Length: 214
Image (spheres, rainbow, N blue to C red):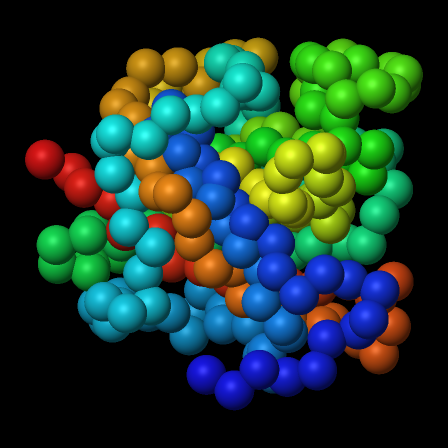
């Protein structure tokens, strides 16, 4: 893939790290267009394009159970908009996996995680929910989540954590329970597409996640 010029205000890569099975998504320079759910269809995905999640990875110190099922996790956090399109496929067949819950969490601009504010040296309101949550994939295996560009903290590059769950039950309080966690990866490359001529217009990020179902 040919790298396109990225705005100098943003780093060239961002990692996505996953949960109890965990993956780290890295952001590359913006590409010309972000794929849509309609374009994805149900065709198998090429092996080289997939970040495979495995069951041996650990989720890291900042995971919280019982997060909200919602398409927008930004809450009142300021930052460049980031529209994530994450496609879940079977790692063996590359067939899209519908009705899987894709859960993400990441640090804010100060490098703090909700539920753990103060661990990285800053004070701010903390109700344990900002920049956390997940959505169910559609029949094409696509989950779309709105957030803001993630921050970082000392010793780690910019990254987003992601978990994939299947067979979850949605609860009356807007969360989920049960199901099976399908795994994580050491790292994955998240491709960014600029949504306008300046960073304030935001970015679209795409990645395909391969999960092991057996």
